Length: 359
Ligand code: NAD
Ligand code: DAU
Image 1 (cartoon, rainbow, N blue to C red):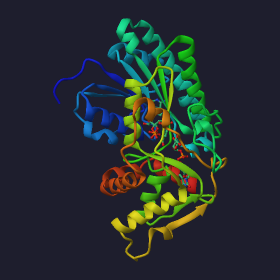
Image 2 (image 1 turned 60 degrees about the vertical axis):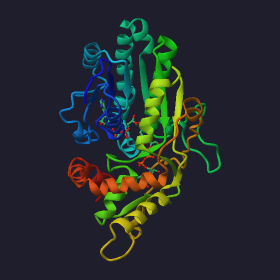
Image 3 (image 1 turned 180 degrees about the vertical axis):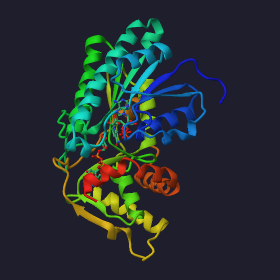
Image 4 (image 1 turned 135 degrees about the vertical axis):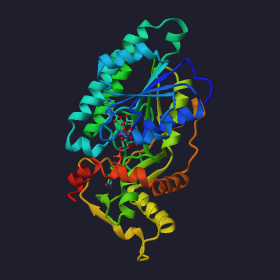
């Protein structure tokens, strides 16, 4: 590392799955420092950022996006040119079991963050003020559920959130929109489909099934397993966010997706087939024999699909990975990063798994 840029960005939630991938990719591509504000909830894991230890371009601060005094202080001290908000409670099942933290962080936290950012932005002048951006990372779940043949979600699709998680994200999207329309805050919003890849916390379908498979445990499929998600490799999500940050039109929203609609059961069977090749079971049977159909998620959305045409057309973005290349990389990553896996699975994660699956 040579020259350190005088500009910087603040990333919130940068110790979580997507945020950590974003910080790692950002600093692999440029020298502009990142101030990483993360509360380190059960989903925040500093081991995701272990490769940045001793790197002066990464400044980690443990704290809450809703802590106005802390955020005001960080903005005043570092004077970033952008704030990118990844921080959220992100797991739908947890939001069903206990929505309160989702309301607190995703709605109230976003509100306080917006207030701090607005106050800071109003102190800026000239080009610095004109160039400042607040990027809000959101989800396709705000649009609700699609029927089998309905067209994919576009930026003008109606908001119809169905879970406490998606409702809290929808509320935060509306706040961000309002801060642009009312105060002129230069915001950008991205609504992305399901991500997968390295550092994915193993409460979500893909990492859960990879780790359960090799541990000889059940691969739990909710309901009939025919629910459809549109999968995107996490690094493609990060590249889209960078592009929107640099070239997106202020006040606009951009959908991000991988054109990879897959039924859950097909995803899990694909994982099993890859593992059968890479790490065959001792008894010679397929990992598919570990699949079990379990009680469905209440209010389970049937299908998500993203039309990312606006991002492709306006900004020229396209994903680098197909589902096949991305999912293979992901399985290999989990097999090769045993220390990360062991440390994650020995923590609070165990308590959650016990509560959710009664094991
Ligand atoms: P994650 O749960 O893995 O990580 C969330 C991070 O935010 C953690 O590091 C956590 O410690 C931190 N955090 C939580 N509350 C905080 C608070 N009050 N203050 C500061 N930090 C806090 O989530 P993820 O999967 O990386 O998702 C990141 C963002 O992307 C979220 O906003 C989510 O809604 C959105 N998103 C996720 C996906 C997906 O497939 N995972 C898809 C689309 C959008
Ligand atoms: O669509 C974007 C969203 O994708 C993000 O906004 C969320 O933060 C992220 O968690 C993800 O939400 P999902 O609910 O789609 O992801 P999850 O991995 O929890 O579940 C994927 C699908 O698999 C879903 O249909 C539920 C199902 N599932 C999940 C688990 C954990 C199972 O069948 N069994 C399971 O054990």
